[in-house]
Figure 1 (cartoon, rainbow, N blue to C red):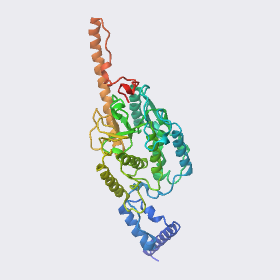
Figure 2: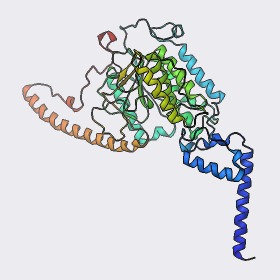
Figure 3: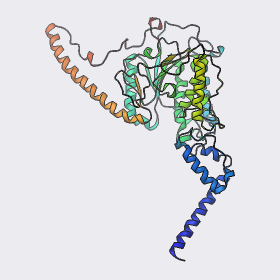
Length: 438
């Protein structure tokens, strides 16, 4: 037998072996092929459909219910698998513990269908926490350290408590298909878990992602939350579809919201727009938007297996209900700027600003370097360092000249007071609500 015939025989043998392996693989995996293909972008899914159908026959595959709602990196994960019991136990334990500690101005959160305290104690000081979660290798990351330093300086300037949570629940959660989806899905749920654990100890919690940098530290929290008569505040062009920075009030409403956020994320299919906790956060807010607007909503926009394209279907569903809200007597808070009974979105100052195709200004409050914009962070940090060095040098020169003048006048030199912009309010956040504070 010549060499060509030998090579052809080897190729044919390899093809037969691979085909047999595929037959066994899919035959032992009944009912799940379509759902696995549902994780793949549409073009790739159609190609895989044709390939498998050619090998096994068209009857093996049914039309995938969705081909676009999940990032392609998640190919091969079991999206429909529930959280493990260990993870469910962790979440419910935290939620129940939070419910057991109602806000200071409320005796029982379950006593009201629309939780809102009848009165507030305006005489006591407002407790504010700046909260983030950083654990594992991120703790040694240089860029993350600089972002955390910006958060710490902001908290210190205004008399807030800065908390860098290390996500202790990570070791208590299970590692099933839902937890390890896309390799680390459980990590994203550190955010609501940390809020469940810390909210009861403060009046307001300002959540900032580990890549959300305080760009201008002169703004006190009341610039964002106003007079404090709402429960959840965010901002930015993306509205409620990104939760990298937001302020949450310690209220009965917030306890209900945190529970709904978790339950939406624990549903068989994650709400759109998909990305771990973000989609569930968006849907939990949307439910409250409809409630504030007086529109009947029964989770109609949650994704299902029966819908071919859940992403576009959810978007269309949101638009349909928003049109109902706009025609009602009450206004809805979905597009910034807006305010409703419990929600607020702000444009100025820029809060949770993702610098995608936009310029970072000195007046921007919180800049969130999410996704591909992370590459912009080192440039901004270098610019800020150069500006700080220039201010320090100018202050030294100015201080020296002013010191000489003051010495001649017998006065004390003013030092470096002008090197850093002064806040609009006292650095210690201790004024009462009755004096215009939150």
